[in-house]
Length: 449
Image (cartoon, rainbow, N blue to C red; front, side, top):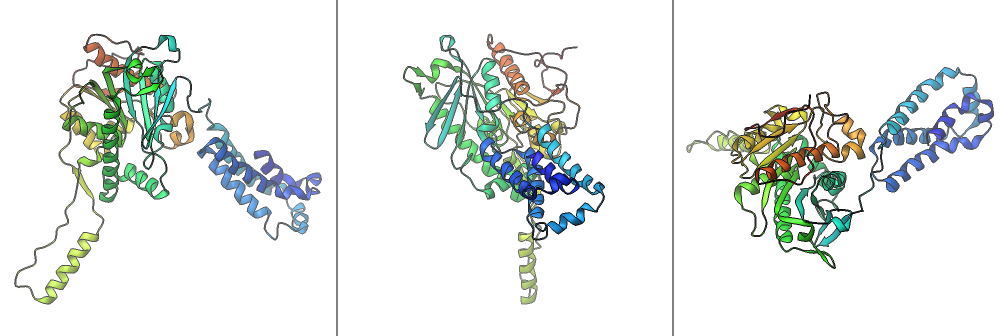
């Protein structure tokens, strides 16, 4: 594709290439090739600049003027330096495509994974690959982010599986997939402005409510000990007495709210929660417009003016005044945030208040260099997006927020909870230096020198 565009750009300045009139079709061919890559390999944001550039060159080459050979005759007399700008643009767009191509295969994990359909849910369970070694492991239920769904945590689930968990994640039709562009816009709006815009906050609250319904469904489904295959049930490979729930964004917020209001169902012992980049939109309050009281003896003109003022006040976009009553978890909880989450104000106000209101052990971990999309598969599947929404600090890891690092942080927290109860079988990796906040200092261990 890049070669096609290169040949088209240098053609007017090369006598042999200029004689091949069919090369005028190369930009269109390059554009079609780039378009085909998306259904073949999925959404590839690093290719978008090159796709746009190919479309522009295709439009120019196929325009009425470009089809006449007299154009190339006139270009022959111009200086070759005119080719430098389009070559520079090609180098930049192609460089982005090559540099941010995923370094390893990011196809969905299939080995050691059970896939089940239950109502509108598609559930994936990651467990020991070697069937002869299968035994009940701690169960990690992972609520995926609303942007990307289960596909955004597939690698994270695999890494958690490798550290000793049986991992359950899912996607739901009508929420995680099968939705239109308007829903996507609302979700992006909630993520960016849900803590300062009332309309965006309403969208965020809706997402939290939906994830809350998912939590109740998954709990009721898990306690039934569903069959995974003919001779294997869930509790053959997962412990009902060692259960953790983790949630991204709205999922983490829903877990905190659930922890304050409800108790685990009988036959299921939930030991801890993990909330990842969760803003607790439902805790924020909307400003109340100040409308002067209409005097009882007001004349009709004053009444009309008052009505217009009231109408404009109601129609004016409302802002968020800040968090009100904030839920606090009764269970041990880990808040996992980007290094932008070190400011206890702004979009993280409610999270910090929930941390302070926690009834049990609570910890906030912010990895140096981690951005808003990190702690998921975005760092390995879509490196260009992770680079655009990066953290502020220099990373303690080579690549912050990768699935492996995320699994280390989560399994370390879970291991500390299990150790407090008498022992852990989880693999607990040493953690490099990062900022951490904890009320008791019991975990994580001191960073390695």
